[in-house]
Length: 121
Image 1 (cartoon, rainbow, N blue to C red):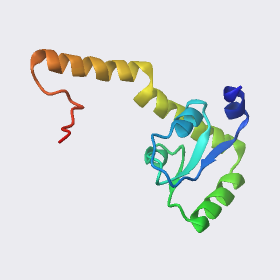
Image 2: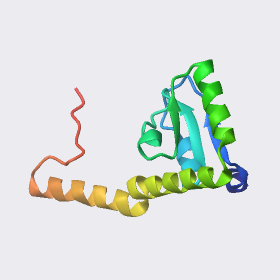
Image 3: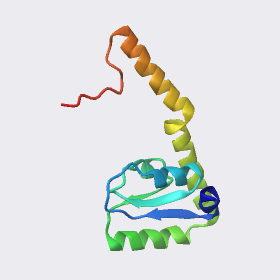
């Protein structure tokens, strides 16, 4: 059911004041749907991967972006969505996660610090 909703969308818009992981954004991108969200959501990669817009939480910026996005042809939105899907697959897909986990285990087994280790003091 949720998958049907994503699949029927041309774009997902999530203006937010809260900082969170952004599962809605990841889900939309995983369905090949481009996204517009605010900088309070941790998805700067939207711009880097050209699969959506990541903007300040300002009415004018959101209005301007929505006018621009709704003026795009569906094929352009689909292209953005496909780039988003590719990004999610390459950074968060099973193969990528598996490689990161194995790299961390191999580092620990060899006595060195895992590549993704962060010190929490």
